[in-house]
Length: 306
Image (cartoon, rainbow, N blue to C red; front, side, top):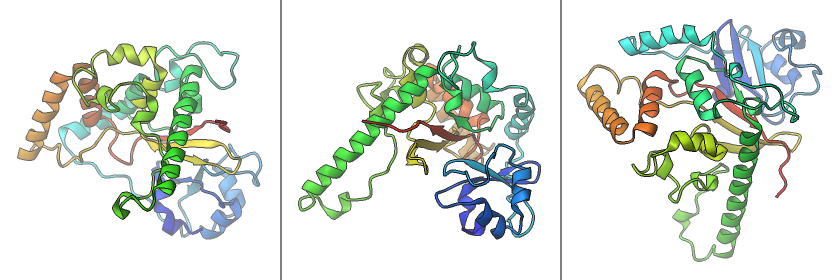
């Protein structure tokens, strides 16, 4: 493995560190060798590693930015009123943690009862600049169970689609045989008649989404991790991988220009027509994380049987 060819797995972190998402085959020895570091250097900035021989795909590793390791630059932001406001908000986020909103431990290990659903907690955390990883430990027991259920739905759907393609390969045009994404789809959540109805797809479907967030953990997940990718680690455990952000448009589109004003008017119309869904969505689009900046979603669901 060479870090130079894996920049998509690296993320900037303040303090002179690079954050690397481990993949199958990575070892501390190979990572240290490729970056002219010692294993001791890596262990010094990764106190979570208890056994150097036990690191797993899907885990994160911090790398001191010295030697041949490329120094990742902090994503640039347009210096507008909005970006200045957002920087100030990040200072507030340092005092705000998802873990602050919880009740006493339950019998289920690592999972806590939560006052607010994960979509609301992660939304507030992101808008105030938080970017720590979103993991299974941030879910309630009900949300964790829902994540397993939805993922099993997705895996079954993908298998059925593969079988259908195999049986009908002579009848399906080649242009319809693109690779199937190994990811959750909105239909897998089974929260609305139309897959997109309750995520901005229709005005009627977006009504009552606040109540729905509290009542249905599948919906809380749908509006948090969406169409997350499904992978497995070396232990055979199923991992959901995604990145949390709201910004479909870049900062240039949201600047004080003619195009920026048009975008703003469109966003305000959407917020007016679908207030319960549209207002938080618009706030997240303007004040939340830009692409590549939000929390990494790495949810370990354990070994799934279905």
